[in-house]
Amino acid sequence: MFFVMPDFAHAAAPGAAIPAPDPVSAGVGTAIERALGDKGAGDDSPLSLSLQLLVVMGLLTILPALVLMMTSFLRILVVLSILRQALGLQGSPPGQVLAGLALFLSLFVMVPTLDTVNSEAIAPYAAGTLSADEAIGKAGESFHAFMIRQTRESNLVMFTDIAGGGTFKSGADVPFSILLPAFVTSELETAFQIGFMIFLPFLVIDLVVASVLMSLGMMMLSPTIISLPFKLLLFVLVDGWALLMGSLAMSFS
Image (cartoon, rainbow, N blue to C red):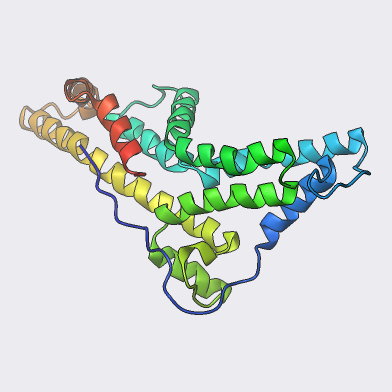
């Protein structure tokens, strides 16, 4: 089963002036630059090693939230969880296995974005040609481009109206403060749409089994016990794992 995703390339409507730089990205960049020292600006008095470690460890605490909310991880994990529920398997595969599968599939999907971050932000910063603040900005631009492609225009309009931000000339002008909630909402909507399509064939099997058992007068026998083997058989016959993984990966194209 393949899923055709809507085109989110033109996410923002034409309109007003370009907004001010996002304070969240600026604050993170400033904190990292204070912690590590600005290689590009020639700052000869960085913080002490203990303070650097303290600031960096504090920044690392938000890394799981960034991975969850700024990559393809959320959509993949939700779809895999819905698949397990549709099959009627309560604890198999375990949650840790689904999270690991979602993580590595997310790495596969995010390879173009990560390559861009490495070439435009990490490598120049390591070479000393970019300051920490500039490197954070370059990395943010790469993730911004990925997120804006997957975000629905309706969600962008909704959160823009809530924030009172007016309109934007292009998707690149949308600040992270508006893009992040719009992206997460779009990912959840897309994941539930895919989950609905996954649920349908297994729901048909449940209905057929329940009808047969009722016609045979087996009221006390749970239809779930009988339908589970047929669901697993159907999933195996159509090569479900490969089909699902490929469809999820292509849904971000």
